[in-house]
Image 1 (cartoon, one colour):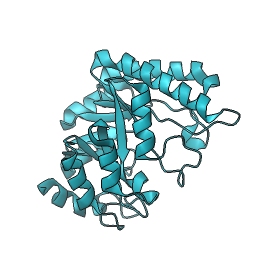
Image 2 (cartoon, rainbow, N blue to C red):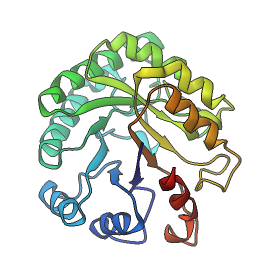
Image 3 (cartoon, rainbow, N blue to C red):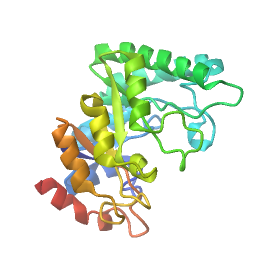
Image 4 (cartoon, rainbow, N blue to C red):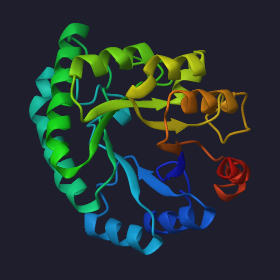
Length: 260
């Protein structure tokens, strides 16, 4: 397993290009960025090449999701907006070549039944999986806890399992965020085991608090052991809040994890 830094959360005291360099200097093997679209693809590609790091993941544009709205992927009335987001992400990804594109399922929109939302979501995920396949980029979707994001459609490993089964495409997999499982009080090894070989990517932060490993009470050793037992050998992306002291001061855990 290889460690990546989520640059939307880490090294935010620096401009984005400098965050990539800082992540490399800290010892991360890759980076991910939630929504990089304000930076021209050629500039991001140059910064990645200069630092010698791969871009592990970006998110598909999600509309108003991050400001409290339902997003795009599961709202039938927003199909045209979703199609435009997919087109934008395809062009951008062709330039920067991330390993994965994450499509956020979103919240249940007012006036939309859960069944209609899921039908729209499944269709959009299948369309994305098909569209990104020629680029060699795998499509993911993640479960997010409903405490931090009320109304989110997909919350648990079981939800993700049902979604992967419904999409039924070889270029689609589950993104497992250990923090979001722990935030709901779910058993981490059981969540990993439930998904098994359907896990395409893993993110983490400690819980409670969503800080660096060691700042909370999460049993990372058990979670990592479960991932190894499930045969997962992919990326582990640090997506946590480093605190007021900054990212560099939060990285005490990194050397220990790299030595494993």
